[in-house]
Image 1 (cartoon, rainbow, N blue to C red):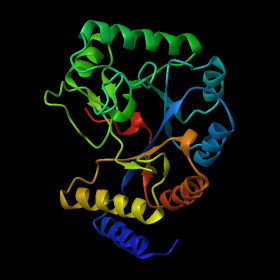
Image 2 (image 1 turned 45 degrees about the vertical axis):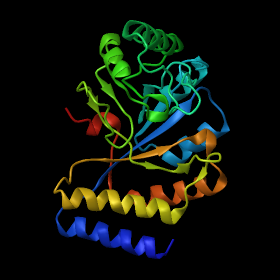
Image 3 (image 1 turned 180 degrees about the vertical axis):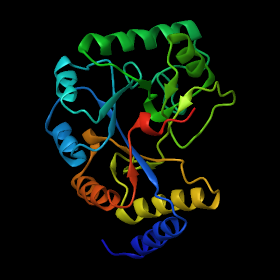
Image 4 (image 1 turned 120 degrees about the vertical axis):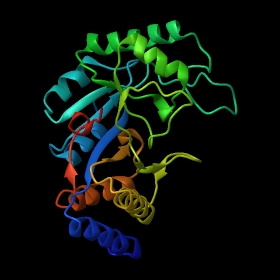
Amino acid sequence: MISLSRIRLDREVARWQSAGHRPRLWWRDDDARQTGDRLERLLQTAAGLPLSLAVIPEGATPALARRLAREKAVTVSQHGSDHRNSRKPGEPAGEYPPGAPISLTAKTILQGEQRLRDCGFEPGFYTPPWNRLDETLLEALHVAGYRALSAWNEEQSERYTGLRRLDVHIDLLRWKGGPRFRGAGNMLDCLREQLAERREANDFTRPIGLLTHHLDHDEEAWRFLDWFIDFAKPRFEIGGYFDFLRV
């Protein structure tokens, strides 16, 4: 895959190497509920690399838990409760209405966690659907006992409550008008920008998070993902959520 975007990315990676550093990469895939051909393709693409799978409690199956138990490099997070949008038309999508009671939100989170545990999962952190964070959810996560989460690009609500957090920064798909591959040039440019931002800030240890949605990939997305994993393995330190989680 030779393009201007690839040349610029290679130059940025070379700058990291010249500085004596290797970029860190981690991978989160959202919206899993059950086994199937697309999940198998995802696991085949990962080929034993660390992968965090965000599982939706409603509809999750024991068969999925049994399948993932065979993948030692896969960790599981709780991906909301039912992944249904409860916001009004025109508002950003989210599971919980703004200002919902914290106790009720915490109860719903705990019910979702218990559904996952009943299936055989051990969720280690929380991933909000649509990466939507607000004060109610953050407080409710504390009440529910969660101490770690993953959302999007270090975006914070007005009152961040200090949960341990590792985010994603590059989405394989674009969503407006329906999910589809973002494009190779766009992906490589986004990655280069993330790398340059860290290098210029002398923040060489902050991981970059890749976000995928295996149920929504088109064939172009799958082909790029296969290429990208091969590209990243010799150039990046690839770790799991708990390998890179910061306090």
